[in-house]
Length: 121
Image 1: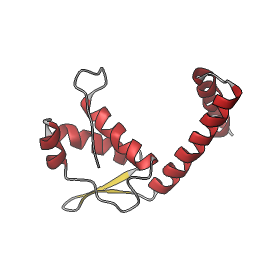
Image 2: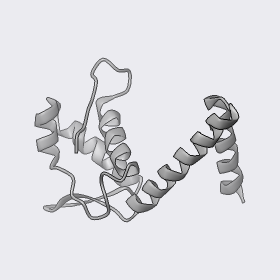
Image 3: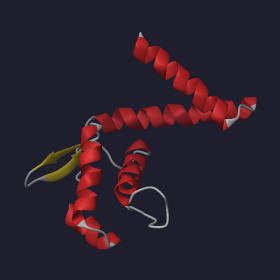
Image 4: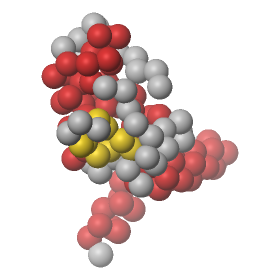
């Protein structure tokens, strides 16, 4: 697992760390049950505070993507498989939108609208 952050970006470091883990889950590079490196190890590798990494892990836990257990660390939940499948479906949708000449902003609006319709029903 390779986590990249850019201190020059406007996004907080903990958000960038969480984004990186999300991307690995979506791409299937992290699977159900797989353990994430200890927060201290990631912090040392990135040159950031351990609490920054823990904040990212807590965000991922709140989203249901990882579980945190004292003494056992962080592990990817069963949601990983569903997220990877959803990512694959999103790639197919994006490819179809490109074929049709649909702009990214319009595609995002279509998906957002569909999501709101489903959530409201």
